[in-house]
Length: 342
DNA sequence: AATTCCAACAACCGCGAGGTC
DNA sequence: TGACCTCGCGGTTGTTGGAAT
Image (cartoon, rainbow, N blue to C red; front, side, top):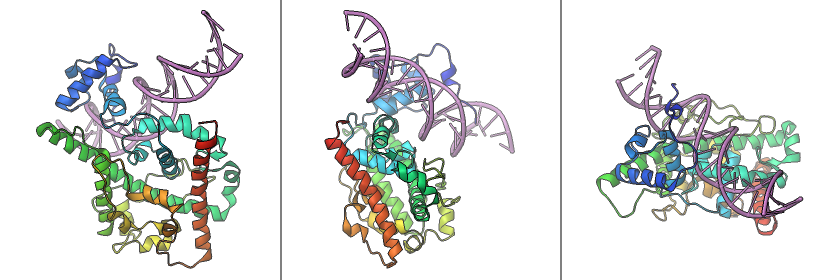
């Protein structure tokens, strides 16, 4: 409701941070945790507003941040998630360990968006530009769009819950660290996310989104960047829990998904619960949706994963989805190795 | 060598959600 | 119940450094 006036205060410094300021902020947080961001600057002896301190910490100083060039894998993940989620950078960031939403957003705006545009792919719809013009009238593509929409909504709900739990987990870990110092430093968001993934999926298995409270399906056609003219969305205005009540998520597994959503055929919640967690740092995100996306275009076993439908149209749609992702992979791969753009 | 242009990235701003009193 | 506070998110702007002219 009310606007925080912290940044309106006169006398507070703006602009680039100096090494001294960084040191002060780091030292204070290492010793006390950030606590209230508003109160932090005065306690830490900084002439900054709390918001500025928070941004500096979360986007730059946090020790669990990886800086430097994005790997090809990371680029692919960003592109894929952006196609699903639109400009929901924080949600995308939960799948890129050690990368901040701000960094991903900047990288998208300065690199990936332009690259896709140069390739003839609309960076908003993630479709070939000529395609995007025609898709509004194409029933087949509309169905694909609806499938993507379902995937996005489903993933959106999960990501929201995951992000929340990761935050809580980090907070708990940090508090533990304050009371029981360790040599490992700060908690890993990725490992927490991995655990949360497992928990979330177990929750699905156990009868819906478990305690994933109100993951509002806020993903709309305008919000996710998949515009209505090119990506008609199916209407979905409930919460995940409401969805489970209406039978979209069923207790005994994914039957309903299979029945209503071809794109979800490859997504078996059970498969996520058995994935491994490799390390505490979270260098590998072996679980969840990303893995599925990364695999489904190349792994034939996945593209056939237990599919019982024999409808030729279904296979056709699945092929279209796979072709779409394959085309992105191919373009990214080929251009990064060949194109002078890189 | 000076100036202009542009890409990259850090940081700011405004808004909304959720919590607290 | 509503005003206020805090925080997170996404869009945008500002700054910087390198390339081009």
